[in-house]
Length: 471
Image (cartoon, rainbow, N blue to C red):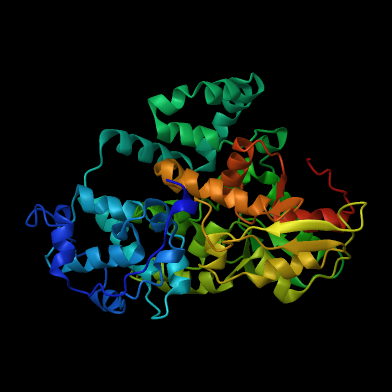
């Protein structure tokens, strides 16, 4: 089904309790005595009750736009949550699939005129699914691989050498052209398809604990390296350090930091998320930093939610609140404190047209939109162009493009078309997952348009490095 062929229609007549709705979806009523939400933080009836079923969320929901079913929209999922709470529907294999199709992009939260906190509702529902619904063996295996590998850089790093050889010998091109992996496992094929290029920089892990500011020190900031970010996007971390120090920041990088917990938190892996969040908080104790800087949108949103994630932990709830209050996206931080370093043009020509790709957890989760654009426009000669459907998810959504590849592919294809249609020469993307998803679909469309993190562009501008744009 093509995104462009979907006719979006809101139905404001669906009430909170509608027997016809359940009659039309009998799978929700099966095994009513078999499974319901357990007593550990089920979706709040008060938050559910805030939904007036107006349907404004439908046109902004990426899963609804692709799948085209009410049950795969925020309104539909909220109805199912309410029905399960009231014993009118069952939390079973089928109903849980509608929660799995949610990207967690939070566009509905931005759009909702009633202020429904769908983000809190889906965050409460996903752990319920993980605790109470058995996964199929293939699903268990792929999820086990993801959650036991991606959040741990020390486990990822040994894979760099075989992956480097795999790419250099051209096996990746052979696998993709043969479509063999797609037939064996579409999810593994999706995982392989977004594998970034392994470079010499990927093997680097020698970050100093403290990097002094250039010139007068204005701030002392901590830097979170990320897990996938530090392995596959080390150039973004290095650019972040250079830009911060060039603008009067002393940068502190605790060695004990690990994953921010975004990946397990978004997928309902509560215990793992809590453990990783506590480790992150502990790593910044007694560092004396004015702010904790993150350069990945998805990570930043979770880091700012630590006070909610650990609110029931008596030992860490206050620490989490203090930590979250210090977290700043690097673009947010620089836009607020101001740049002191001189900026130079990125190209020899008079101007460079850039299209900025809004990452969902930056735009909808952290409400950061103007700051990245303002920073880019400070670079001499930069012109910005805006894509159609800028607020619609690209389909990455953490690991969604690996767990729900079909829906993710449609979203990625449409996102890239919209970006290319701007006629821009370069894409600026502030999140590693978005960058991998967009790069994949650029390649599938035979386009090698340049894509960089905004902080890399600022770094080039400060160092007077000219871009070599791909044509």
